Length: 158
Image (cartoon, rainbow, N blue to C red; front, side):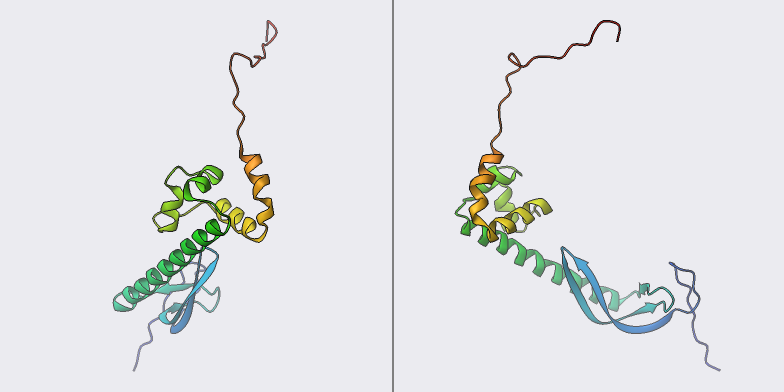
Protein backbone atom coordinates (compact mmCIF):
# COMPACT_ATOMS: atom_id res chain seq x y z
CA UNK A 1 0.00 0.00 0.00
CA UNK A 2 1.38 3.39 -1.03
CA UNK A 3 1.41 6.11 1.59
CA UNK A 4 0.80 9.67 0.54
CA UNK A 5 2.69 12.28 2.52
CA UNK A 6 0.43 15.01 3.87
CA UNK A 7 1.53 18.39 5.02
CA UNK A 8 -0.09 21.07 7.15
CA UNK A 9 -0.14 24.64 5.86
CA UNK A 10 1.84 27.00 8.06
CA UNK A 11 -0.44 29.92 7.12
CA UNK A 12 -4.00 28.65 7.50
CA UNK A 13 -3.50 25.32 9.29
CA UNK A 14 -5.19 23.35 6.52
CA UNK A 15 -4.02 19.73 6.33
CA UNK A 16 -4.35 19.10 2.62
CA UNK A 17 -1.32 20.73 1.00
CA UNK A 18 -0.35 19.08 -2.27
CA UNK A 19 3.02 18.62 -3.93
CA UNK A 20 2.82 20.24 -7.36
CA UNK A 21 4.79 22.13 -10.00
CA UNK A 22 3.50 25.63 -10.73
CA UNK A 23 4.62 28.98 -12.03
CA UNK A 24 5.75 31.22 -9.16
CA UNK A 25 5.34 35.02 -9.28
CA UNK A 26 7.41 37.31 -7.08
CA UNK A 27 6.89 41.10 -7.02
CA UNK A 28 10.13 43.13 -7.19
CA UNK A 29 10.45 46.90 -7.57
CA UNK A 30 7.10 47.30 -9.27
CA UNK A 31 7.64 44.37 -11.62
CA UNK A 32 6.70 40.70 -11.48
CA UNK A 33 9.34 37.98 -11.72
CA UNK A 34 7.86 34.72 -12.98
CA UNK A 35 9.69 31.44 -12.40
CA UNK A 36 8.19 28.72 -14.55
CA UNK A 37 7.46 25.21 -13.30
CA UNK A 38 8.57 25.54 -9.70
CA UNK A 39 8.02 22.42 -7.56
CA UNK A 40 6.71 22.86 -4.03
CA UNK A 41 3.89 22.32 -1.57
CA UNK A 42 0.73 24.27 -2.36
CA UNK A 43 -2.29 24.88 -0.13
CA UNK A 44 -5.62 24.71 -1.99
CA UNK A 45 -7.38 26.46 0.93
CA UNK A 46 -5.41 29.72 1.17
CA UNK A 47 -3.12 29.64 -1.87
CA UNK A 48 0.08 29.70 0.20
CA UNK A 49 3.10 27.79 -1.05
CA UNK A 50 6.17 26.31 0.58
CA UNK A 51 9.39 25.74 -1.28
CA UNK A 52 11.21 22.48 -1.20
CA UNK A 53 14.85 22.08 -0.29
CA UNK A 54 17.82 20.89 -2.28
CA UNK A 55 18.66 21.45 -5.92
CA UNK A 56 15.22 22.83 -6.82
CA UNK A 57 15.47 25.50 -4.11
CA UNK A 58 19.00 26.40 -5.18
CA UNK A 59 17.92 26.63 -8.82
CA UNK A 60 14.94 28.80 -7.83
CA UNK A 61 17.22 31.11 -5.82
CA UNK A 62 19.63 31.52 -8.74
CA UNK A 63 16.77 32.31 -11.15
CA UNK A 64 15.37 34.94 -8.77
CA UNK A 65 18.80 36.55 -8.29
CA UNK A 66 19.37 36.70 -12.05
CA UNK A 67 15.93 38.26 -12.65
CA UNK A 68 16.49 40.83 -9.87
CA UNK A 69 19.88 41.77 -11.32
CA UNK A 70 18.31 42.19 -14.76
CA UNK A 71 15.62 44.50 -13.33
CA UNK A 72 18.23 46.49 -11.35
CA UNK A 73 20.40 46.91 -14.46
CA UNK A 74 17.47 47.96 -16.64
CA UNK A 75 16.26 50.48 -14.04
CA UNK A 76 19.78 51.90 -13.61
CA UNK A 77 20.10 52.40 -17.37
CA UNK A 78 16.66 54.03 -17.44
CA UNK A 79 17.66 56.49 -14.69
CA UNK A 80 20.80 57.41 -16.61
CA UNK A 81 18.87 57.92 -19.85
CA UNK A 82 16.29 60.15 -18.13
CA UNK A 83 18.99 62.22 -16.42
CA UNK A 84 20.73 62.75 -19.75
CA UNK A 85 17.48 63.65 -21.55
CA UNK A 86 16.92 66.30 -18.88
CA UNK A 87 20.38 67.70 -19.65
CA UNK A 88 21.72 67.12 -16.13
CA UNK A 89 25.12 65.81 -15.14
CA UNK A 90 25.39 63.49 -12.13
CA UNK A 91 26.38 66.28 -9.77
CA UNK A 92 23.45 68.48 -10.80
CA UNK A 93 21.05 65.56 -10.40
CA UNK A 94 22.42 64.86 -6.92
CA UNK A 95 21.92 68.54 -5.99
CA UNK A 96 18.28 68.36 -7.07
CA UNK A 97 17.32 64.93 -5.76
CA UNK A 98 19.71 64.57 -2.82
CA UNK A 99 21.68 61.49 -1.88
CA UNK A 100 25.18 62.98 -1.91
CA UNK A 101 27.76 63.82 -4.53
CA UNK A 102 28.24 60.24 -5.74
CA UNK A 103 24.58 59.23 -5.52
CA UNK A 104 23.75 59.20 -9.22
CA UNK A 105 26.99 57.46 -10.13
CA UNK A 106 26.07 54.71 -7.67
CA UNK A 107 22.43 54.56 -8.85
CA UNK A 108 23.50 54.29 -12.49
CA UNK A 109 25.99 51.51 -11.72
CA UNK A 110 23.47 49.60 -9.63
CA UNK A 111 25.56 49.95 -6.46
CA UNK A 112 22.73 51.70 -4.59
CA UNK A 113 19.04 52.03 -5.22
CA UNK A 114 17.47 55.50 -5.26
CA UNK A 115 14.49 56.33 -3.10
CA UNK A 116 11.14 55.65 -4.70
CA UNK A 117 10.38 59.38 -4.63
CA UNK A 118 13.53 60.07 -6.68
CA UNK A 119 12.52 57.52 -9.31
CA UNK A 120 8.96 58.83 -9.48
CA UNK A 121 10.05 62.46 -9.81
CA UNK A 122 12.58 61.58 -12.52
CA UNK A 123 9.90 59.71 -14.46
CA UNK A 124 7.50 62.65 -14.06
CA UNK A 125 10.15 65.09 -15.30
CA UNK A 126 10.90 62.77 -18.21
CA UNK A 127 7.24 63.07 -19.27
CA UNK A 128 7.08 66.80 -18.45
CA UNK A 129 10.58 68.32 -18.82
CA UNK A 130 9.00 71.78 -18.79
CA UNK A 131 8.59 71.30 -15.00
CA UNK A 132 12.36 71.09 -14.41
CA UNK A 133 12.80 74.86 -13.86
CA UNK A 134 10.02 74.76 -11.23
CA UNK A 135 11.70 71.86 -9.45
CA UNK A 136 15.01 73.71 -9.53
CA UNK A 137 13.41 76.82 -8.06
CA UNK A 138 11.53 74.86 -5.38
CA UNK A 139 14.71 73.01 -4.46
CA UNK A 140 16.69 76.09 -3.57
CA UNK A 141 17.14 76.36 0.16
CA UNK A 142 16.89 79.57 2.11
CA UNK A 143 19.58 80.17 4.68
CA UNK A 144 18.30 81.13 8.08
CA UNK A 145 20.58 83.35 10.10
CA UNK A 146 20.19 82.62 13.77
CA UNK A 147 21.08 86.15 14.76
CA UNK A 148 18.15 87.60 12.79
CA UNK A 149 15.63 84.95 13.69
CA UNK A 150 13.35 85.89 16.54
CA UNK A 151 13.02 83.40 19.29
CA UNK A 152 9.65 82.82 20.85
CA UNK A 153 9.68 83.15 24.60
CA UNK A 154 7.18 81.73 27.00
CA UNK A 155 5.46 83.97 29.49
CA UNK A 156 6.65 83.49 33.06
CA UNK A 157 4.90 80.75 34.94
CA UNK A 158 4.40 78.33 32.03
